[in-house]
Amino acid sequence: ASVRAEGWGWRHAGRSAWGVRDVDLVIEPGERVLLLGASGAGKTTLMHALAGVLGGDDEGETRGTLLVDGSDPAARRGRAGLVLQDPDAQVILSRVGDDVAFGCENLGVPRDEIWPRVRAALDAVGLDVALDRSTTALSGGQKQRLALAGVLAMRPGLLLLDEPTANLDPEGVGEVRRAVESVVEASGATLVVIEHRVAVWQDLVDRVVVLGADGGILADGVPDGVLRDQGASLAAAGVWV
Image (cartoon, rainbow, N blue to C red; front, side):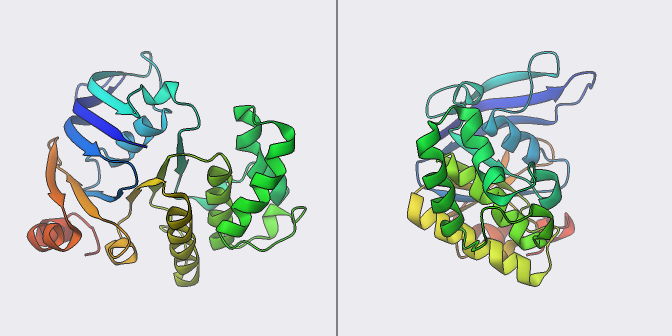
């Protein structure tokens, strides 16, 4: 999936300041992007907008243009898949298979297609557990891979990861990192990931984009160059470079 943003911004209802503004960004299909910036720069807001879950006019005001595959993200249901940082918050159903199938069912995928997709998604993320396994019995890393499998089963063209390893121990971090690499290699999906642990993702991504605290894109380029030029300011903002 492709992403196009021109002068895009979002202001939450009842607030005078824009949560994110003046974003000009082009991401081509299959690119892998690490999105960085200080807390409050609008990274999560941008991710939610790309996923089409930011909310309607009653929840805030938008300006500029933001498109996924040439359309409003909210109109491209299922085209983008979002994985959040809290593994427990993303588990919806009590059994592994049902949880992975949930998104497909919401998209209206034919019943006879859902379970092959579920099994393929679990294989892709390396989660070798029974379909009737209780989701409460999974570790944090396994739950995050379960969330990734649920997204993958919907076959999105754009994979959005919002600090997917933030709440995991080192073993869980490694599990999720390897699963994501396997998924993007196999599917060719476009990847956008927010993460404070830069080293986890640096060798997987093609680009690093840095959102400025005052709006706009502060830096955009190959990882080594951006991290060299912006390393000090990113470290001061709490990013582990």
